Image 1 (cartoon, rainbow, N blue to C red):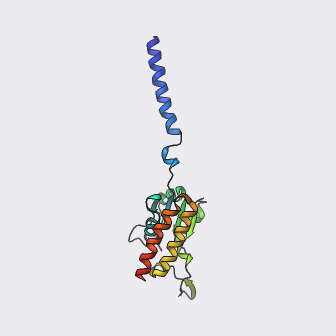
Image 2 (image 1 turned 120 degrees about the vertical axis):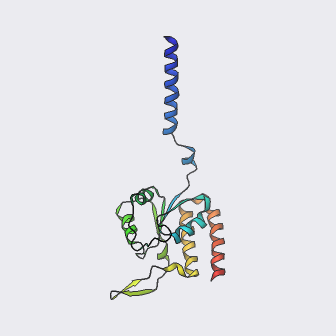
Image 3 (image 1 turned 90 degrees about the horizontal axis):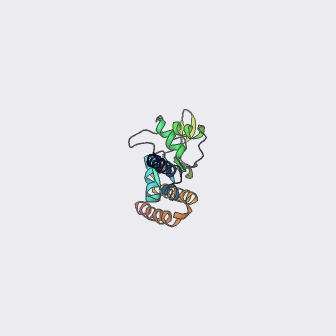
Length: 178
């Protein structure tokens, strides 16, 4: 009977210690990569180029999706709630996603990347509106790159050099394109 008790208690200790390991901080939490959520493919591409392997970047919109009419799905809410940084265009390009970001009380840092640029105005239904399609000009792309770089440095200063280096390379490419 004593051997059975020893086996039982040994098994119980092993079980409890493995449960305890799941409850304790993991190596991933010590090497936390910022969780970045980008609302459009353009912004997601810029964030990935700048952040590289130092960030986890999720794009809500997939290639070909229309940001003007996109309806968020539950996975979008989950991604936004887990985000450390949300990058969106602004100027009402993605109205339903912006509503979701503003209505859920998400605590992540947010950056309206497109709103770093003074837009051209257009007239819609008799009113002047800002044109949200600011990324078509390489000079505007440079402004967007710098804004994303600075925000990434703000949330993850340990990787400042890498973000700065990656952004400089991208800025050089955009200058050559311009």
